[in-house]
Structures are given as C-alpha cells and as structure tokens.
Length: 169
Image 1 (cartoon, rainbow, N blue to C red):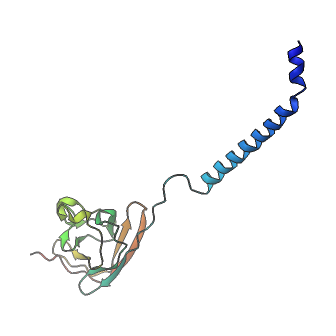
Image 2 (image 1 turned 180 degrees about the vertical axis):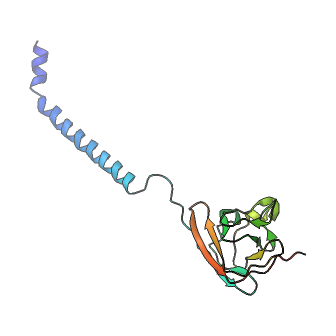
Image 3 (image 1 turned 90 degrees about the vertical axis):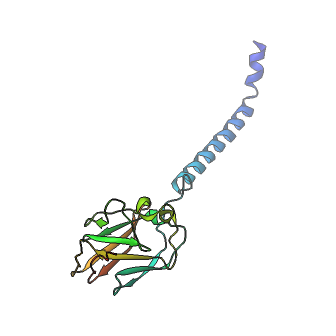
C-alpha cells in the first residue's frame, strides 16, 4: 500500500508530459493537414505543353515555331470538324486508314510513322500537313484542334478556309 501512495505525490510530472505530448500530436496533425491541403502530397499536376504553331494557309500546313522539346508526337491527339488526312513531317499518322473521321480525336500510330518517329520530340521546324481525303478538296472552313493527351488540354485550334485534296504520289 505504501508504494501506491508514493506515486500519487508525483502526479504533476505525468501531467506535464501529457500536455507536451498533446501539443506535439496537435502540431504533427496540423502539419500533415497543411501538406495535404496545399497539394504537396502526390505527383505534380499535368500541364499543357508550350508549343506554338504558325499556320501556312496556302500549303495547308501548321509549322512548329516553338516547342518545349519534351512533348512527343504520341502525346498529342488531333481532331477535325471534317474528314481529313493528317501528316506529321510528311508521314501519315494512322496505320490502317489515313482518314480522320470528323469530330473524333486521333493519336499518331507508330506503325504508320515508323518506329522512332512517333516517340520523337516535337521540335521547331516540324510540320503538320492537312489534306482532303478521297481526292476531294474541302471548300468550307475546317477547324483542326491539337489536344495534349495527359492533361486533356487544348494546345491550339486552327482554321483553314480551304484544304486541297490528298496529294497521292
């Protein structure tokens, strides 16, 4: 019984340690909540690449004027409001058919462009040719939209007044 009385006299030491532990736990929880809310937990968000195109209306061509050089052709999808053929640096981007159906986004396919071309970085001077399909020229305004796949954001939207028929060599 004497041992129990001895511990009752030293209650203040336990209370101080308890308060210190409670403050430490509160600070740790507050820091965890701050990190979670501020977005520091997890990966970095996908951002739209910085790629600038110049339009050559006469040649039905988009030319890369500036690029971040880390985006690859396989990271970009193409969408058109008309049925067209898209060529990247002179190579058709679809394996089975050269035609892009209207209002459907398409991604370049390695089988059509060659093994390395699809994984090449988009560099200044690269170009995209737009042609009418089935030997038919387009005489109405056609809109071409380039979309960054990972961030699902629009890189650019370009309008062409007319598009020449497919150049069959």
